[in-house]
Image (tube, rainbow, N blue to C red; front, side, top):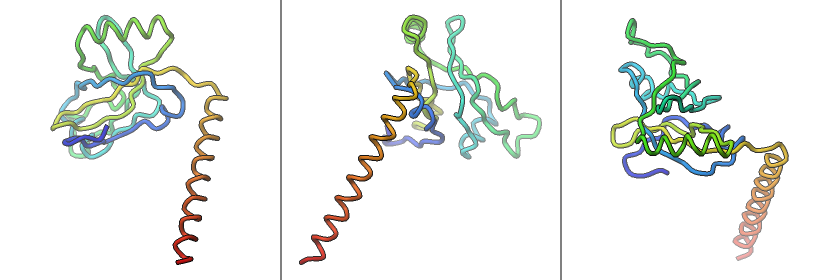
Length: 160
């Protein structure tokens, strides 16, 4: 996803571990003034948050934005639901997929794109414990292969 004009502020690494990500979507976030300043400082946590569709609107629940230090009375509740900005047709399509296929909408990252705050939503299916173990074993095997390739390449250079 790193493109020109994009600055990633927060990522939900746990989501990539706990879910299979079927599709990703980009949405705007409706924020209040001090929340924007706080997010720009990196004071955002996506751990254990999810998106929910109700009444044709989509909102993120559990996204923690720390209060802005210099915000005094203008600070808002750190855990308040934040409305997401998407096209109605897209929200309808997501609502159907979530209700029929047993999928969940999980925020994957928050980033600045050309000065605007965006959130990347993943249409996700939960992983079972054995899926997580398979992923960990595959990553460990890849790491071991890379390590041995590096060692082998280092030995060859030393023989010259």
